[in-house]
Image 1 (cartoon, rainbow, N blue to C red):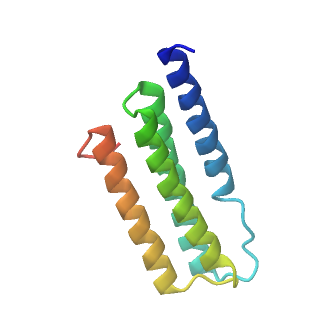
Image 2 (image 1 turned 120 degrees about the vertical axis):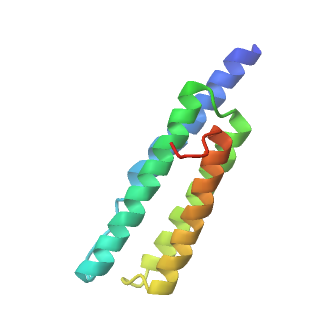
Image 3 (image 1 turned 45 degrees about the horizontal axis):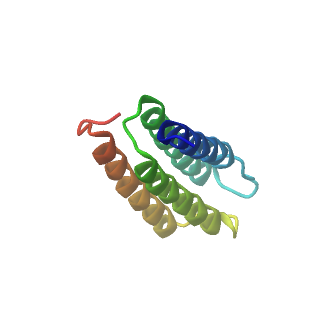
Length: 121
């Protein structure tokens, strides 16, 4: 397999993983949440979606190589896991939310650094 075919296959694999992540990030039950925590959870999901879209854009445009994309996708998965753990009891506490938002801040900085755009996506 040539190098370009290998890179294309890797990019397709990362793209598929990101597509799956963005679909599962918002697919959870809101039963039992008060309106404020549901809003904040939606905000976390919206930010996850935007970050995944930025990673997909970097893959498509060639700004991210396979290793960079894999590392950024892994960060997104860790955030999804932390959010699922926080929601397991039906309520996301303020400390859990702060931790998730700090993880998203770190991931956002990583995305901006890898894309080479200091102002944002």
